[in-house]
Length: 187
Image (cartoon, rainbow, N blue to C red):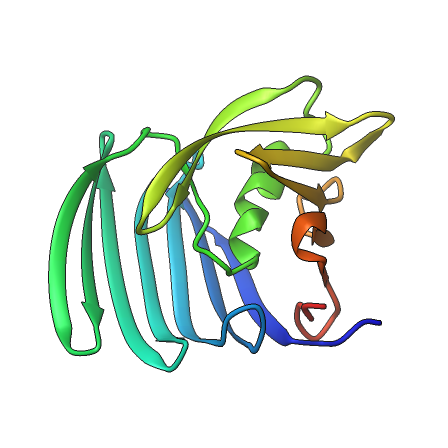
């Protein structure tokens, strides 16, 4: 049985120096999350420059600002009125995947589209917590379907030739996300 548990609305913009992904939305499961504003800024090579999140996670207000420079990230987090700043080393080309927000997977679909021929070793930064070595591979006989392996988690991502995120499935969580014209319903 499918149950709609949320939505995300996003915009993907390109300019002379890079790309900006902007997201807003709401989810009730597996965690209650309200995305007032999420922004990922990337350069032309898809290297992250800046990340912003404003919203609520499980009813707790959060404001996260992250700035990237040559393999370092400075995260400033305001959670429940408390502010903390920390610096971490991350791979320069790490893919930012805030958990459990799904639109940022579009960075992978825009970068690789339907052209990935063999497994690519990537680094997934579950911002602002940890970096996980990962592998991205094309699904056999279906170049517009990518499989992301992050530890024991396997995520199937469908795209098109333009790199539009069509769907995302995490079988271990019985979760499937489908793109619609209005937004991205999460089932």
